[in-house]
Figure 1: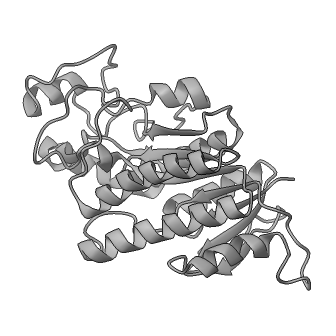
Figure 2 (figure 1 turned 135 degrees about the vertical axis):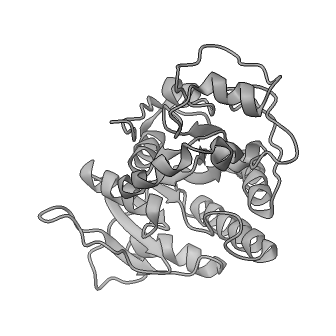
Length: 296
């Protein structure tokens, strides 16, 4: 049984990731500032929880050491963590001041990356963001669509800037510590199944969701991507866009682009309602296959 620390395991994506990893036989430690809202699966393996503020470096180091049982021998140790899935942080722009968002997300990521390399963790999978591509697209349109990982990173907020800088941080951390692989997931707007009820309200005005090219992703598919990133033969440091296979709109994707981003070239094949944030690289390298759609 391999052990994984999931930071932010009580959040929307984190909850789904914990559930996914437990279902696939991993031992999981959920590290968060608040306890999980749901109990462990009935009859399934437990998920250990530790309340930790990851803005402190010592707390990040201790969260990994505690999983290995090196600091509290009164409990059965889960074993040295094989990997960290880092989802903790302020999850979107506008939820806190720019300075607080930048500081929190930069420092928690620095602390977890550093703690992971000190502990000899083999893999770090972490939440980057679709916003690194220039979202909310108020300054300039994308250079092409569907947007791939080759698109320049043009962060337009303190949140996106922190994510882009953390991707650079991952590159350098891997260069310093070749034994630890870093995989960034550029995650689209996460919806849970209960959120599907919001989607009909987007249809009358496509401008409501223009800001991220009408993209989205189900939390369960984020969890799938995180697990696959732990298991796939990935490069030492790489990034993957994680989105649903379709948009949130009933209108065809080409029509939406023609109306809202005229002149932006469409590259390659594009399904009628196909995502405009390409997931082809994640499919090819990770084996990612989005399973959930609000249309079904």
